[in-house]
Amino acid sequence: MGLKLKRKPKRTWARAKAQRIRTVGPCRYCKAEITNDMSFVIFATKEPAHYECMKKDDGQQKVEKNLWANLQTKMVEKKPSAFSW
Ligand SMILES: [Zn+2]
Image 1 (cartoon, helix red, strand yellow):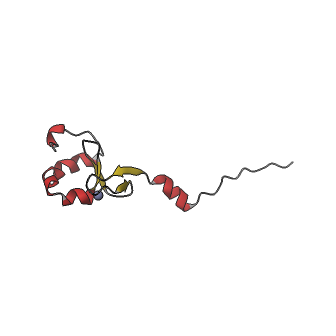
Image 2 (cartoon, rainbow, N blue to C red; image 1 turned 60 degrees about the horizontal axis):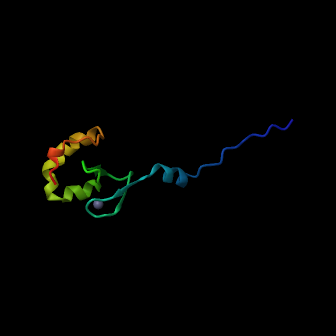
Image 3 (tube, rainbow, N blue to C red; image 1 turned 90 degrees about the vertical axis):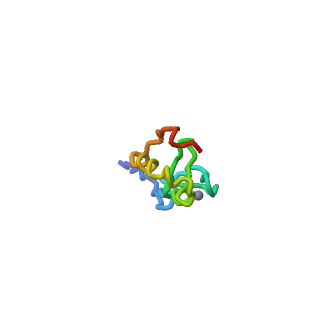
């Protein structure tokens, strides 16, 4: 009796990788698309930005520590008062 073995289609590495990488959105600063394999931050305004871009912005230096604390838990929940821009 011929039992047919159903073979799962081989996943190519490229495809598996492509599925894992998602687009987060355009960077707040450089407007380039951010993917989740990069270092990025998400502001209280739900705008994503490259971590490097945020670092370059002098105005963000003060809130960076605050932001990092929040990023540790990857929570988007932030106090609006700390983000007056
Ligand atoms: Zn950027």
